[in-house]
Image 1 (cartoon, rainbow, N blue to C red):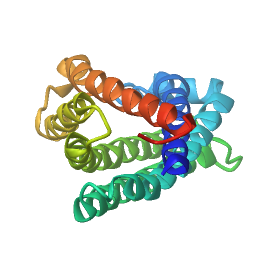
Image 2: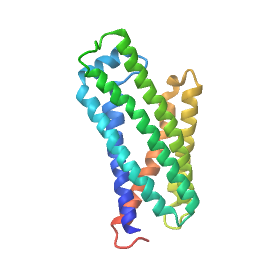
Image 3: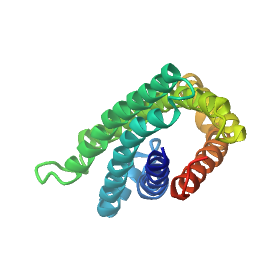
Image 4: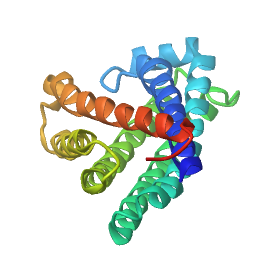
Length: 226
């Protein structure tokens, strides 16, 4: 269990590093789904940054797959069936993100296809369509991830070893992910409230998951798992 805690902690840490770099720095800064001209210009001028962002997402997915296994092993003593459900939901989220990521790979290929005119309206429309597909599929995956966090939060709350506050934070984050996803699809003016929803989702998720990461690393590297 000591080794599993260490593995989970390292995997979570790598997800934080790779995910934050890929999403908030490398990719999101280049894309404006409401402005095709600015997006195409950004992707053209920052092709390497976009590629590194894709690589960062791939790294994140690899460690996410590792967590599917390790968290189930770590928490199955609390409740085996719920632990299996939580891990299954995380795996489904990984599959959705893989499907979403294929759209970014295709965008990168289009940007480097010598036979295509990047300035052609049809090519730009195709690129923007792929980017919107990536965003929509990712949002669906994040809603599933939110349900996963609810089960994970419950397991942590019921655990005798892990601070219950972490479980509570993850449960709040779970609600945030689901509410944000529903709002994204249902609210025509979602963009006007995007920053508010981002705070609702990111704050408890980062605090909760990072706290869990620290706990896992401490327990994993101590001589004995409490």
